Image (cartoon, rainbow, N blue to C red):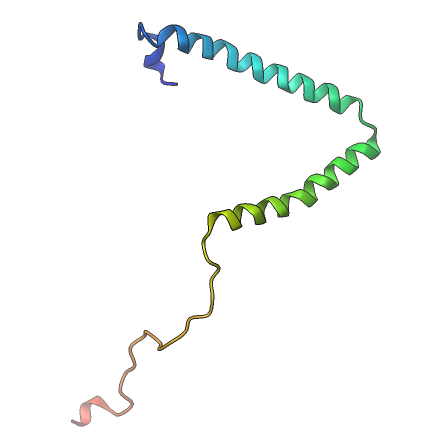
Length: 92
């Protein structure tokens, strides 16, 4: 949302509603998360932390596979750097 949208007669009311509702929704979601976390025992918190650590590499692997970029493989064929002559150039 741009600042100028607040003063636009057509987009202004919609922008004001978004400006008021988005922080309210974020606040409610965080309150629900805090209420759930306060009911966990320390063992449950540790298990949740271990699960997050285990899921992170899997999520990274899935993201990289969906990108579709090929992994770097060894180059085949001729070397592309120029090769200088072995003899002394000044003798000619």
